[in-house]
Length: 316
Image (cartoon, rainbow, N blue to C red):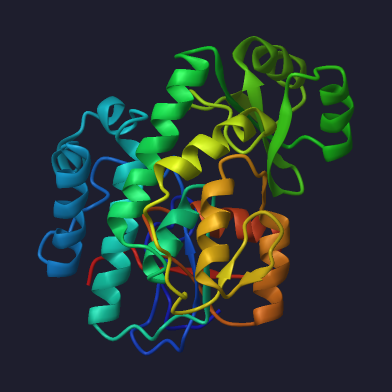
């Protein structure tokens, strides 16, 4: 690890500020769950960040800047707010850093809805299209599943073979995220998720329900894809300014239509961060997280202890 990296929060997961003279990086965009009151501190003075937030607020009607600055956290984490905040903040950070001289990335990817941030950063689609995609997913999911019947659970410190064995007896559930060798999420009906969590809580490091209301990244979402594609039919994707990495299988995506299709389908495709990490290792470029916190730094280190992830979050 370069001595130029500055440790910012030694009490928790490390966040290392990216040196201004850092060569081109592979960027990692975090997903929902990274939102926090105070996440935008220091960014309001930067025009590209303000413009991204202004556009997101106008498009969604959500008071993102106020909630990011003042809370309450429960309102910021609401399903109709958190994804917009994470997307707009990440895009604003990227655009500000580019304006200040950040080289064009070698490649980029995102975890879950963080892939939408990567699509916008790569100029495949405008920010408005990614915001509309989030809105469409929410609208269609609420119509299909209602509120409170479906969701996701997380499991940390559980062997994958043990998890798959239990899931074989809970056919309504699906393995939705392989975040690490012993970090997983599962999607499906809340009752079955509660059964799964209760089974593993005595032995897992951590296990519980996630604050989401939809069975994302699993087969339950697949029937919504045709309607989702129709809702976004007017979007015309452009060729990406840099390659994108699929969070489904780690392949490089170099065409705009394929990248946008991946974004649409991602709500029903499982996330496999282990495959992403293999691609990151093969690319060999420095890594930087473009968003609040150290979600992807932690996941990447769990998968490969030799990979360090810097951060673009500390405001210039």
